[in-house]
Image (cartoon, rainbow, N blue to C red; front, side, top):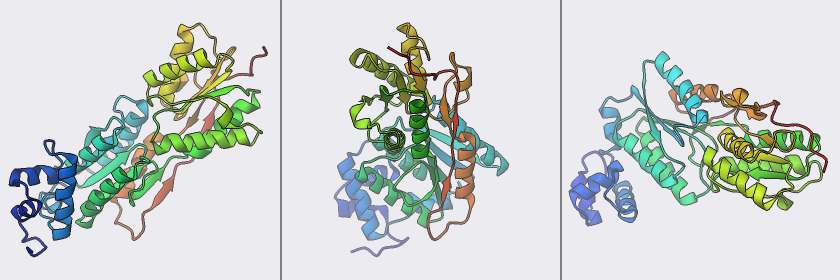
Length: 344
């Protein structure tokens, strides 16, 4: 067996894996052209042998500590643009560059983006957005990021992940509970949820919060419609169409992010359903345009720009023995999109 350590060559890994040198290089750099099964086997062999020269050791040797890699779910979602703004503010203060990557809420693509950033020798990686309930994907990302950190790279995340790194934790469950309390307090009982993409921890946490808010008033989410669609404006439109067609007695819709809420409002406007006289709508995040919608959107405010700043601040601190956690808090912002439940 070749000796582990910096003298180990990439060709040793390739020979052990039974692949070409080019295939081994592509797999360890996170590039396309290698099946996931083969790439996983090559990475596992490299870890067993102790091969670190490429790409991890190169990360620091290449002198790229001035670059921050930021992975977001959706670049055109105001939630992520505001988070990115906070990251960029701190980066400017520290004379750092920021490279932004888009995952599209695809866990496989997000993992490839993380590996690409490592291969490109960034010094810091920030993953902004929900974790996933797929333990296989989370375990692979955790292994890669742990190796990256062991050689001096720094990592922080925004959202609930199982990656064992510093994290900024949005107040998702408590915010969801506030929305449930608000709607029930207005007399709504026929409530539906536009829930977003299944498999995201953010969706699960916000949904659990809404359920807790309803349960406190004797209502069960199990008896109410929960429609899972894309966690986007188009997803909100699709969810609203289904809710109206399949549950016409609904008087309030909870959208689990503001982008979905905008889609819900668009569908209601197209169907000439008056908000809030016939249907109340709530969102989550309080993106910058939420106050300018017609009607203005009732939502839960998260400090998104501050979340970006907090994440990069964590990543710039010396690594601690245990991952640090920074909660965000939340605030219910009541605007014109909610009102008393209509009498029928």
